Length: 400
Image 1 (tube, helix red, strand yellow):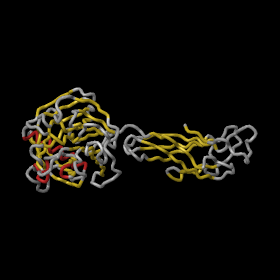
Image 2 (cartoon, one colour):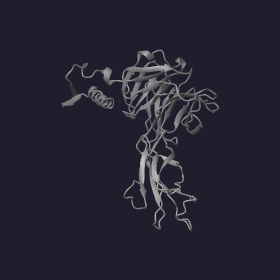
Image 3 (cartoon, rainbow, N blue to C red):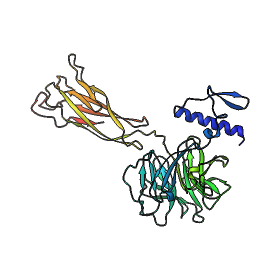
Image 4 (cartoon, rainbow, N blue to C red):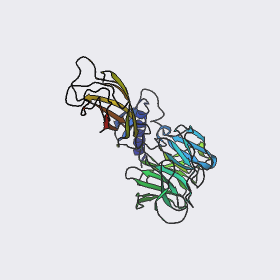
């Protein structure tokens, strides 16, 4: 890659990052084949390498021997904190989950800014397994088995390990792993081998490219650029960026990491979620509009909803309708809160039983919506009790 191409690429990446972080944008103008910044203040010569180098997204790294987790972005180490000894396997999916990667050892979980959260769990018993790096697709966590040359799939808390495929070869051949959402494949990096490979989810070799050295650890795919980042285990603190076709795009050295054996690396995975939440149950309190004395009754709804990614989807009442004509003098219903509504308990001369239909809408953080309707009868018309206010109805609600 020549200087011009590299510069243009990095400048565009910086512009994208600037927009995401609301950094004052850089105006650009084309002059020949080189893009030059036009700025009213002095910037280091043409947006210096200090701005343009390093991963665009925050890269989470583990140095288990040094009990340290490090976050780097661009040319800077932006944060670090202490972690349990030998915690190398890392997966970042809204939170940072670490594992020693050996049977019986405790796993740990942190917020993206380093606050310990959740309850530490024990890594499951997987005989002969040692993992040093992890990955995620936004739902499952994955790891490369360093001793058995295979990919393992876990639930979100590193439980229920399931082998996906093995590639054979000698123990310790590969060490790093990254998930590629563009084709649901896995990139693995060599330890005793000087190459990076790409496998399908069933273990078919898709592509591979050579690297000038071995000990290629902490493999991760930057979602902002679609490029691979890896640590050079022969020179601690040095990281390299590769295209998916094997071109070495850039290198970045972090002096603060020169004494750290970094083996685990991962970017935060934000999955594309197009699946709406599921409403598993819906109930009302009170569940009977009785007696039919024309009073407004406050009804509170309870919604139990689950979602693939959002742990707390939000539910609310969006509409109330009735099969009877609207009262000309009084309101028959009034929404009073996200899940509360006042309904009038009244009886009509009509031959139709009065029915209120309440529409519930549940939304996840990605904006996916699920609607459900609760049908509530003010008083059912049954034989011999059409106007009998002393006999409560047997059933006044159902879910559609």
